[in-house]
Amino acid sequence: MKIALVSDAWLPQVNGVVRTLTAVAREAVGLGHEVLTITPDRFRTLPCPTYPEIRLALLPGRKVARLLDKAVPDHIHIATEGPLGMAARRYCLRRGLAFTTSFHTRFPEYVAARFGVPVRLTYAWLRHFHAAASGVMTAAPSVRRELEGRGFRNIRPWTRGVDAELFEPGLRTDFPGIPRPIFLTVSRIAVEKNVAAFLELDLPGSKMVVGDGPQLAEMKRRFPTVHFMGGREGRDLARHYASADVFVFPSLTDTFGLVLLEALAAGLPVAAFPVTGPLDVLGDAPVGYLDTDLRRAALACLTIAREGCRAHALKFSWRATAQQFLGNLVPARGRGVYAMAS
Image (tube, rainbow, N blue to C red; front, side, top):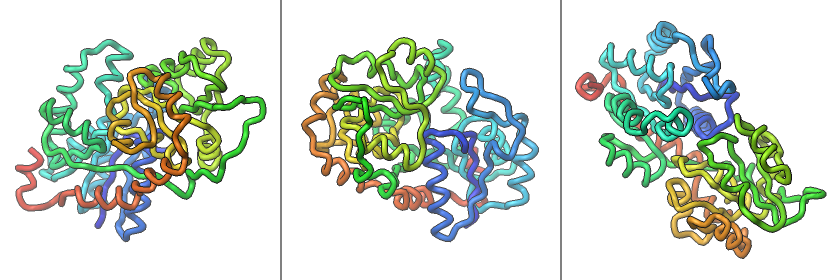
């Protein structure tokens, strides 16, 4: 199959959306399919307000149309609701082509936290955007139920995976001068990630943060005893996971949380709030604690065996994720396409 993958989130961004899309594209190619990526690196861009590291395509409509006209893809998937996603959606509707979309990010909650825009207004716009799709993919069952309650239709499950060869307990080492137990979070340092809820906890040992973001300087000023390690990638990131003792996930807004799987694969038990993401990833498995009291959950995780955490993570693979994605796609030029796309 020839698949057009349209996304406003792409390398060099470091986030769960980019990791998911690049992993699925790689697996799809490995399965013999052709993947055309229509991503910001192909366009003139400008920095996203409040997130300058995110680049948004500038007036991409004509070039998106040229790329899709030339490729004539069998399937079109629009992964994000940004300028590229809107341009591809408009292209498909004008030509009567069917396409799928995915819901990765709780933009309504993010916009509300940053600019005070009512959540209901942003969800209304997102519902309109995704209503034209023949299928809307999202990872967590709890998110699917929530979206259906908000009037979204054609929701399709699309799980997530983890690179268990990269994230593994054997990389465990000590950090000289950093007392144990080490409580770790890996996150973009931004208001919607609720990182301060972790940093404010009274915990023994040390707190460690891996990641960059717009609130990093502020967090360093407010919490001078916390060990801020900056952005890490690849084996270096995996070593930080493996070398900690508990993974603390303070976010209240993630739709899944790939970092949860990465932490578990490295043998880290997870402490989190009982919300979407942790509820779906951990389920009933004895690999962490979910509690409205995050400190209590973090301390309880010190009693959990690391072996069980990795065993749970091994249930998730990128190959299975890619196969589910491929099964969710719809023919762009099938029978009744215009009716579906409308």
